[in-house]
Amino acid sequence: SGYVFKEISEATDSAESIPEGPFSRELLSWSSSGRLVVAGICERTSDGLYNSAAVFGDGEHIVTYRKIHLFLDEADWFKAGQDEPPVIEHRGYRFGIMICFDWIFPEVARVLALNGAQVILHPANLVLPYCQDAMITRSIENRVFTATANRIGTERGVKFSGLSQITDIKGNRLCQMSNGKVGVASVTIDPILADDKSITARNDVFEDRFPGLYTRITQDD
Image (cartoon, rainbow, N blue to C red; front, side, top):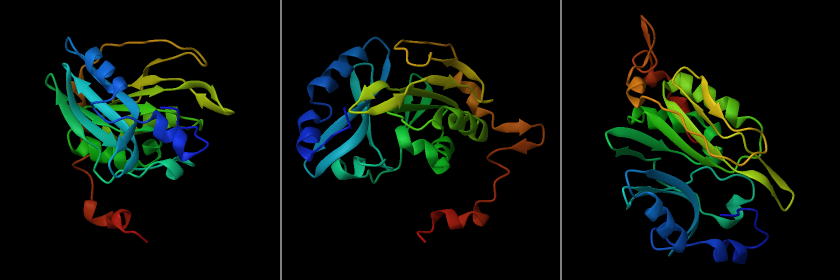
């Protein structure tokens, strides 16, 4: 989608409607034959532009998530999404969607997990060096798998950190791309393992919570 824009006209020119746009139609085609495809798109709507993740499965548009937490100059081009990050079901498994800088807010991964996500899918244009390690923690604290697909290379002096990876419910990296390398990696996982939230024989990461003591998190000031 670019995102390293100099002016609003560049963002507008790169944007498209979902699922009618040309890139969306290509993703729709890729999702045939049982595939689930999640990709970042600069989305054009009647009320402005959004940094969005479009989700396609079995040749159909399933959902579009509009990024909540805008990073740096994104706020100059995009509106922030106002809807809770979605959890969708595909072929009997449940997938949660987040975008890039959402990672730094642990509430996002927690909400996805509480809503049943077994796997968090995370398209990203990361520039900071922290996310790949932080997603290990997101996996452990929520007992979910995560898959971060990150951009590499440099655009207008902005260097993207790459190192796309998949983590399991214990925080193990199942795979990680080589630094600075373009490639495709795959692993076999059992998402059902993420339904077990026990961290020890007597501790459960959901059942042991005290939500009534965490209300400060939802207050604006």
